[in-house]
Length: 390
Image (cartoon, rainbow, N blue to C red; front, top):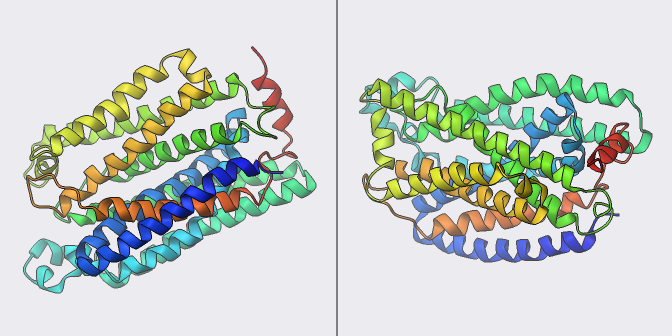
């Protein structure tokens, strides 16, 4: 049976946060519809990113194997099963496209030669079709992987291990391709005069960081009770800590690469993106991201005792998870605000809280529908015994 007490500790506050956040967001929509859509996009993208990051990580685990993935697989799978709901929650954004994107406003397109040049790609109809393709591909992968996981629970068929690999290997390629285009559509096109060829992998690495830190936090929460309390060891936490360290490093590499390329090129179409984020108060947000998303986690995760201690590791994971929200806001909000002025609207807090509460409630519901460990996976016992080695 799932750790019901642990799930209840998550469900109740999540539902309460969703209700309070929804009330705040509805009031905000009535007062300022433009700001509502901006905050809604920001909140939706973060929580959808957690689910998408979990999808990528579970496919990586199926391709590479490893004990680390077996102990968090059910957490990852439950998160992926929220994607159909996130697709449904994407629909309201389609009604706010002209309020979010300059390329969706015919008057601005008519006055801007660059937007006219990009119009064959950046237009409302094609944007909607592409979004449908993205969600169809992701939900298709979720359906296949979870269907095989349930079949493995019932039959224990060892051939399913190979089938997981046959789906996940091309699935990762499909995910990278679709997520690259989605990052351009949903975030980079907020400022259509700016572009970066590394932007897609930067956003994907951020999603992986948020997803993995979330998985660690959930594992520690659920490891207090059966069936996980008797199997999760310091060795498992050590493996997860090392992988979190790796994901943080990958994100930092892409973020620094994008900055250095723009700085070295010093081109007028690239530099303004960073100028808007490095002045008027935004520079302090950027500094916080550098210190709390990279420098501090880097130093802490170098320590063996931090990686092996669940209490310490979960604090680092929660720090990284929280600063991921700040980093995404730093990437998106300056596109809408007054240039050179840092500002946070109360809807920018209310909408993510509402969406996050609802997402966590969905996650907890999905997690309770399957055993917390893939008990009939042929490599589970080996993974658990490896965790007990000193």
